[in-house]
Length: 176
Image 1: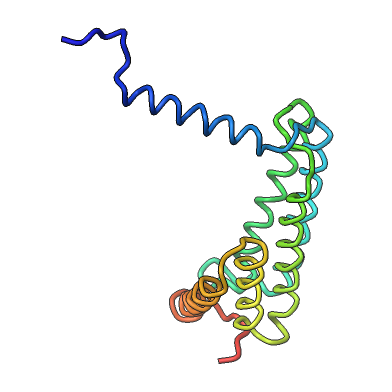
Image 2 (image 1 turned 180 degrees about the horizontal axis):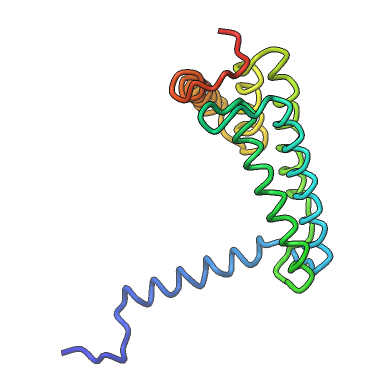
């Protein structure tokens, strides 16, 4: 019969691994920010939400029975804007923000590429801008290999193409 107070060897190893992972994560975590960082983050999200709503409205809203290409991006953009306003209201009292570092630029680059997608889609269709967006996000922002990037990008764009155009019958601008 074993003593319940003495941990099993497996539990000791598990506790050591957990402590090591917690230590590694703490070392990699950016320094703490403060309330000002919460407010800045909320303002950026608010601009993104409002900008997305304006751009998606330009694609046409349609109706609930026959949604246009801008309907769901508009809904998501409004949700982002509302959450940003909520963060502005309560964010000043929160202290769990992180200071901006070099890795903070990655979401901004992602946002810029998404805006480029929105601007190019009416001009040259859905396929090419979406493929370029996937490549930039996977290879340059995500650090994936070229092989993984190419395969995932093509499969993703094809899946969204068939989902939106044939499954949901959303009239996206497209080449094919």
